[in-house]
Image (cartoon, rainbow over all chains, first blue to last red):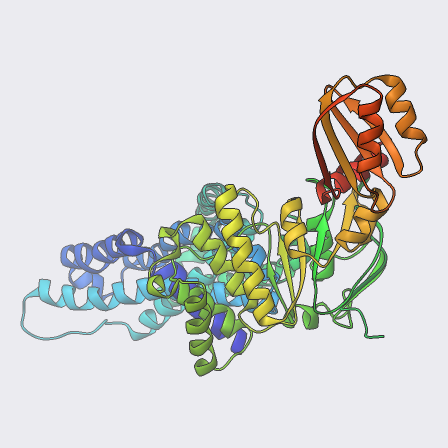
Length: 237
Length: 311
């Protein structure tokens, strides 16, 4: 556990707080769109967590991850810092888990900040003087869980891609392609389902099913990442 | 007899048909700087990877600090420091954060880490720049910091892979001096990969020469010089002839003689006097302008060994 904390400390210092303002522009921009522009325009619909809002909440972590995850392993390899780290006593698992935890927390944190900011802005845009929380607590909880699962999916998939990429640019390009394939696959699956099946589900039930699918995918990708992240293999690549 | 800090027996690592390290049997005693000499691609880096347990050997075995590299690699890495081919510093982080990270990795308490950071950075004259991102530093400063990082947790053994490669002669000499001071001060055993012969000559108590994955020879620089050739002499002048060379070659103190333009190169047996040889040449009609005596440099030894292997 100590080693994982060390890696979390390192990732936070190296990747998040030492990248300067340029590294923060993209998440700030996303938080601005998600937490200010959309809630201001949608008002009540934002607080009702309409399907559009849910899609935005799920999409934001993915965009954060795309800009970030390539750097996590391919970047370390490109800058030759990974080899030195591998020559130290720290375990493979601690290195990988430290990276996964920090990146997931960063992506999920962006979605959480967006939801919190959105709550304030949507209330301000209504202008009725009375404060209103998100109307459907079950949907809010699902949004929180879903954005965490999506973050974890993006990170574990991103780690796998980053592991097999020679450069950061290559990792980012592959991750964009993987995202398109994943989203496209999801849309096609939904279209292939009988209309009756979908209409018989409540919004909450639908998102619960999505959560279950994501959790399975997360577990599979995380497992493959842990198996793939091996010193002897990394030192040769 | 104390246990060697590194012992390899028929250690080999093949990548497909390429024999990166081939049947390497070596012993490195504790407390010395051991130079591992070889041209680029000779297998030096692969050897370090094998000794750190980062790669599995194809054949043979190695024990480092008494631990088996195959089954106890973690224990080896916990007790050694490494500066590999690249400095491997986090350039967006400050110098003190870079060192602090490795102190945390090696589980040093916070107070010990703080004290060690101050001690090493002060010693290397980097303390004033400790808060700057390392990316803003010069290459020489970065490499000094990387050396400090390798020594940070007081390891008994340090691996250095070509620490001065790509440096200009002045920067290389400065880094070499820092390295020598640090190593002497810390009292560590150093396994130094290098193709820089001056570096090996200045720093190493023992050297091993590797070529195409095979260990060619091992010993102290003096022993290697003696094995490859004794004292040498160079006579500069005019009028040297083949009969003179033949006469010289017959002398018991001359092991080898050859002529390059106006330079007569002699390899001597033992510490021979030059007077009789010079007078022989003068009596035979040669004009001698200058006589220089010296030992074969490690570079001569290295080149001879490479040539012998090649032929």
